[in-house]
Structure formats: C-alpha cells, structure tokens
Amino acid sequence: MDYYGNQITKLIEELSKLPGIGSKSAGRLAFHIINMPKEQVEALSGAIVSAKNNVRYCSECFTLTDNEFCPICASEKRNHKVIMVVENSRDLAAYEKTGKFDGVYHVLHGAISPLLGIGPADIKLKELMVRLEKDVDEVIIATNSSLEGETTAMYISKLIKPTGIKVTRIASGVPVGGDIEYVDEVTLLRALEGRIEL
Ligand code: ZN
Image 1 (cartoon, rainbow, N blue to C red):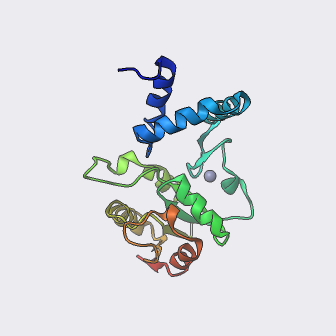
Image 2: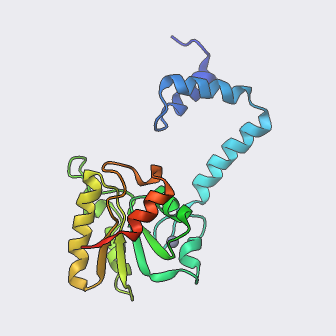
Image 3: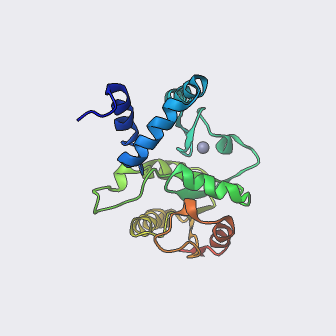
C-alpha cells in the first residue's frame, strides 16, 4: 500500500538503506528534506554526488581523500617512519583530533573476521607490507579492541616480526569492544602513550 505517492516512497526507500536508519527515521528524514528550501536540497545532493565522484584512496595510506596523497602523507612535518595502523578513516580522524600524533597512518578498511568471512586479503594488508619495505622505525597497531580488532593485531604483528621493525599495540585504555571513533581524546592519548611492544 503506497501511502505517500511514488516519489516520497522512493526517497524513504533509499534513505532506509543507509546504516542506522530504520524505516521510521527514513520517513522523518524524507519529510524533512521535502520541507527544506530547494537550494539546501540541491547543496546536499550535490555534495553527495561530488564526494562520491571525487573521493579516492590515498596512494600511500589508503585513507579517503581528494588527491593522490592525503594531507598527512603529503606533509613533510610528519614522521613518515612511524606508521599507525587503523581500521578505517574515522579512526584516523579520531587520532588526528588529539593533535599529538606526528607519525603517519595506514588504513586497513576493515578487520579480519573469520565469522564474517573477511580474511587478510580483504583488507589493505598487502599494501602495508609494501610500505614496510621503506625505512620504517615503528608500526603502532591501533585496531579496535573487539575480537576482530585483536585478531587483526595478532596477525599483523606475526607478519611484521620477521622484518625486525618494532611493532607496538595501543594500551587497553580503549574499552573492550569499544569503537575507537567514539572514545574521547584523553583516553586515546593515554592508549597511545601506554602502547606496548609486541
Ligand atoms: Zn595518506
């Protein structure tokens, strides 16, 4: 039964495909959008399309960016010999917000999860190993403290150990099962400073 007419139903349908948006929220958003000024709706849809068309992976660290290299990898002020490995670009942003890490990052885009069928080849691990062929002093593993994050940390540490590069894991200041992006900056800093060698 189509209560609203095709166009609105289609909008609700598309919105409800977004993560965390149930059909009720999708309905609320759809009516909000329809009541917005036309220019604002055009700015929103334009930003979505333009982001999708122009955002790409950084050739070095694989975070999402507009150019071949992200601003962090392109910066000479950063210590390119210390690489912090994170699960996604939002975790990178969380650590960047602390303003205290002057190394660079490597974004895996996921974590190993045998349960979900996500193996080492499904995340940007090969790409990390290629980076380690250059002069690197330390790899800080900052994956989440979930089962997947820990599995990934163990796997990476075993992979890197033979290279002789120092491998550390952020301290357990980050709550177990906690997503790094929701942890406050002080806790993140403490986890970083208290990192232990694997
Ligand atoms: Zn980068």
